[in-house]
Image (cartoon, rainbow, N blue to C red; front, side):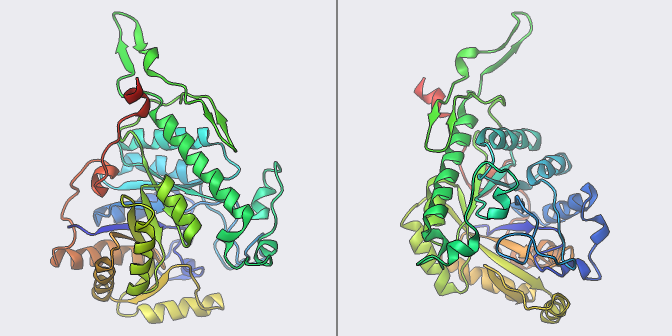
Length: 391
């Protein structure tokens, strides 16, 4: 069975000092050509998809609010708009932008992701993300958030997912995904007639109001965007603990988890499988690759003034050693991997060229794209529209 591989793209890479590597292109970070080159590299490696990071606030070394650092990358593109720009330049790879469910309307996100699915020919996904920072909330001014420091200082606050405020944000996220999924189904597949002689462009009976009434949203529908090639674009979620695992099980098709060993991976898989037997489980890893990987990372740590810390395990080594790690974790139940290149383009090139070749030699990776949609690549069926079935 082909191992599933994805790359998580974020600026110059996942190390804060990556933009200072000799192979980096800091002057090109805010250009379409730069991002097109990264995605083209991932597609040459036949990766399943790339994810594109996004947030409602500037990158910061602080848990909440902006810092005063000028030696790290600050600023990014809107991930959904960027993915739509990249879609016509690609042919086989999936595009999965991040879009927050906090402070945004699910109607807007739903039509954006549906549009991406249309313009990519069925290769769109979405990573919904909650925004817990009070500084992000102040950009919108519609509601007050406690600071992260306040949340962490509450009894039991070391686990953010145990906080009532954070629980509410995940409940809101679940409602937002449900609204999006209903909107994606609100046009039947054959609602567009486009018959010039009779003058009928659509069959109005095949457009359905969704009439969603929840604790956070009230959405009438239908969508303004016809049902897309995949019917339901792929929904992914990053999860580190029980609450986000539950969100992923109820709302997502793919979950990104963050084990730090094979034993930890097995325990996470058991917990997630207790919630869902259908969810695809990917593991995240930050990777620095090559014979000099450890030295490269140490040099970047020195430039940044601190050793890199991450929610995901950090791997330094050769592509052969990484292949051994991935296959070991697959035996623990992990079905795929979202690799976060420490510095791009170098570590992305190592993933797309070196790692995939190593896995292919072992009979563990594809030699061509086997399907034209992201759902097809991941082995997910195209779901029937709920309103068509009801009718």
